[in-house]
Image 1 (cartoon, rainbow, N blue to C red):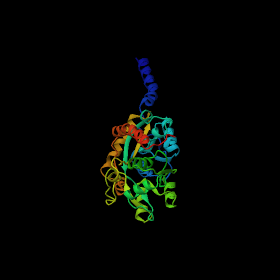
Image 2: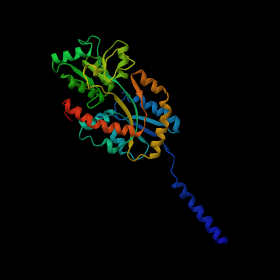
Image 3: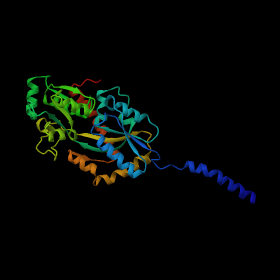
Length: 321
């Protein structure tokens, strides 16, 4: 009987380390990286850095934002897809649904290679000109572009970005031929615009508004389907050219090997932000709104927009790279 008891105790002692290893470890158990695959200073950094700060405080591990620009977001996105540490996220714009149409060899499938976590927010964009521009409203812009085909230029933050698509769609449906000048990110775009290198800047409203308020730019229109409360006297481009209203959205994705527990924890931590937060207030002040609605809405949005942007690219005559 003593022998049996000793054997049982020994077996239990040997089993303890194994049992401990078999128990799942709570996520996150190490620092988490949020990769932003665009140039520094873009609009996606505002919600990205706010979420990093919020999640760091709530989940007990640092959430670190890193920018990895290149190829319209493809470089950083592919880096996230390739990670296996289960502690890396991608904070992207709606361009993730556009890039496959303009870069067929992009090297990844956003539906099959990325795991949706949540839409974070969406915002309007706008078209801005300098105060000395020959046209100061949308009908005058359309008239000027029709009078001089190919002469009017517009700048965006890069090929295949949402700011590019907003202007390309407007031009196609307005029946105008204007020339696209792509920049490497929003910082270079605003510098080029202020230097007079392009006639019109297509940018996110959060970037445009300070320049409008300080007299360096005139806002011709917002790209959202409806007017935005922060600039109620500025028309939507859809009022002038129907069927052109779009927004820019920001979302959080993970690699496909991301654990379900981690997705559930992230979504649970988003809930308090929806009822009121500095991020929501900042988004509203620049014509945007906070979403944080979870994986299902993001998955549906991505699947809906992929064929939409293929159609827009064809309609606007944009050549795939």
